[in-house]
Length: 148
Image (cartoon, rainbow, N blue to C red; front, side, top):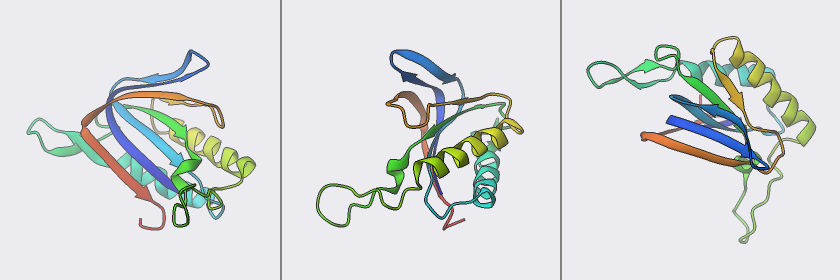
């Protein structure tokens, strides 16, 4: 599983000219799910993401978590995080999880995040989405379940 966590001042996702998810201060998270991923892996990734201390405290040090600043989450499924570009110029996505399985895990992640974070917004699984954000910092963290 892969999460690209971007600290944002705001972010929104639009599908067919309709804003379906919008947050102010918080994380916009791109979520890639592989065929080997499980709920246990998702739990580990959620814990790590929510507890990241990447917001500034009163002294300007990145010492505060999402909960500390009462930030929101905008969770976007993105299978292209598993693009394999080793051969040729056209990416292969064979490492991405099958759609039904990935959708189930994506929905599980949303459900579990809602237990811990007051505002959780989402994209639409499999839709053509337009994502807008103002990256704060910029501050972007790559979390890979194989590395945490």
